[in-house]
Image (cartoon, rainbow, N blue to C red; front, side, top):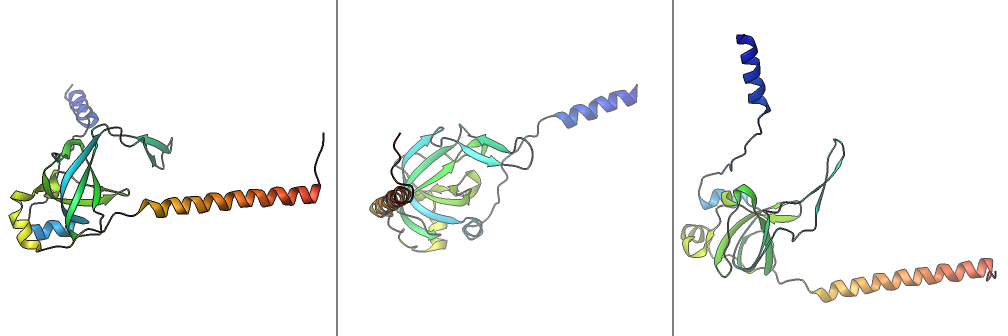
Length: 189
């Protein structure tokens, strides 16, 4: 009977869901700037909650191989960046945060933000030493003056590239139609 009870206890213990807690590194600003890919100061100007991303596609080696994932707790906060200490970012930069290790940014407040690149986006959380700028004296003293952010890229250049691509596609389509008519003649039914 003891073997059956111990088997049941082991089975129940192993079948339970695993809980994950936030694991944070303690340390000085110099430790955290080494961990982060980007460190900047900026004002939180906008936040979008869940649904800002249509879906994320994830590929894995086990069936069904393709997964669509979306986290409704994820938020996207846009910052008006004033100072950069690490990384190259633009004057308006968005950072993803959310889930159990979320750091809550309030619109209109200025923050020092530590973030890492994850799947092409900047992501942050409570373990990244984010803080309101007025309470970040130790960080500001350790990092010095910093540098200004890169200006936001112009959308005009993107529109010009798109127009050139469309014109090239139309030219190719016209050329192939002209070649087909020249080679086969005009077909009448």
